[in-house]
Length: 131
Image (cartoon, rainbow, N blue to C red; front, top):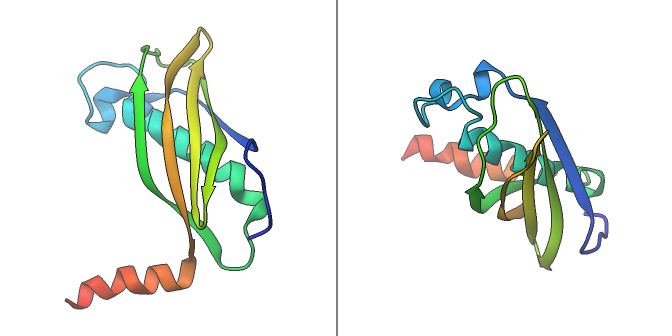
C-alpha cells in the first residue's frame, strides 16, 4: 500500500430509486432511502478514499460500522456519503462517515476497514465450503 495520511477523504453518490428503498431491501415498510443503502454508500465512500493507494492484489474489507440514520430521504433524491480517515493502526483504517441528501445531513458514524490481499482472503473464505 502506498503511504497515505490521516485526513484523506472519499465520496460516493447516487440518486435514490426503487432498489435503494427500505420497502424493497427488506429493512422496513416505507418508500424511503433504506439504512442498509445508506451504509453501503458510506462503505463505498471509504473504498473510494483508499482506491488510489492500493497496489497489486491489495484491497480492504469492512470490519465494523456504527451509524445513526438521522433523517428520511424520498425516492428520486440525490444522496452522497463522505468518508475521512481518522486513524491508521497497521492494516486497520478508521473512518468518520457521514451521508447527506439535498436537504442536509441524514446519517453519521464511524467505520473500520482492514487491508487484505484479495487472492489469499478469497482462498481462506472459499475453504469454508470444504468444512
